[in-house]
Length: 407
Image 1 (tube, rainbow, N blue to C red):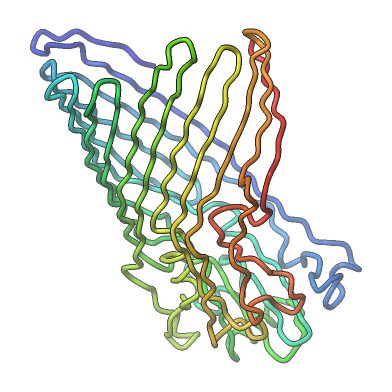
Image 2 (image 1 turned 30 degrees about the vertical axis):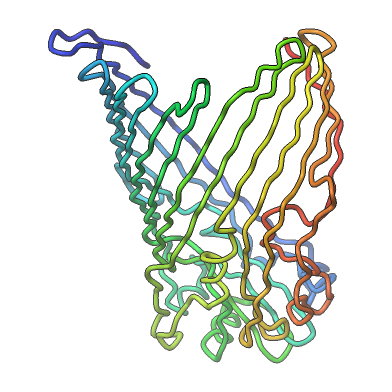
């Protein structure tokens, strides 16, 4: 519900909004048939065991309110709060304060401060599975299982975040619209998967859970509130048009992002696991280095009569990630790196009438691929030829024909 309310002491109406939400979430995982659960199973992936099976649910109730107004014709402010109750994760209350000041029609300053909350999903709390090779078994353990309890794995807690941003909105030239925003996001108790854990305590816990494994060793992982992180970045957006009179119009768009994530705290393992680090360098590398630090894109949309043509160039910065030894899942670690690359997308569209249009296009027109992975990181099947963390598709050029019908 939303309603503007006129107040004598405000130059503009106070917009009062509120709402409520109810969600019922379910998660179910059934055991595989007997043949799939026998020893190593088919293709080294056994069917889900009876100990993997889950059938859980939860209820979530939320309410929110928002107030927004202008204290002066140039200054607008909004304040929002939201409260949620999770039947399995407890209660939370978060808020957001946003403001914008228009110094003149061509220049404005905006800022936002907010808190956030994310409860662990039912899958993060309950999923488990086993994968085996001739020499090692890799087991994903449900954090609420008896085996995880034996290892001292704590129950998952909600993630909490603090977010701040500051931005400029301006028109540097006539009909050229730009925005620059800088932001910082701190996430506490971030939920991630642990690195591969092994040793006598791990093997005992696996056996106590009734999980069969083959090979000389077994690695185990589970979801945990393993780290705190800080993400800092800046976003740039620029839009403008070129009018070609009788020859149509070109709409330009330029975007740029610089983003960097740093792990600020790493949780130690339980005493049952020796008190060492739960989070391996592979996990840290995935958080800090697998996303390109820079990404830029410029596009031109040309409109002429019923035709339209798109040309877009996207530049990705360098990204990398450590990989563990394929045989043990542990050290030595190998760094796979994807060099900076520029991708080209094109599309040609035609509007047959106000309702129906067709577009023929190609993404990654020049068939760019990331560098292949180091052979040692490809596993026993040698299947992981391209990095899984690639910021663009490893399948090369993608052609499509799209129809749109509006009514």
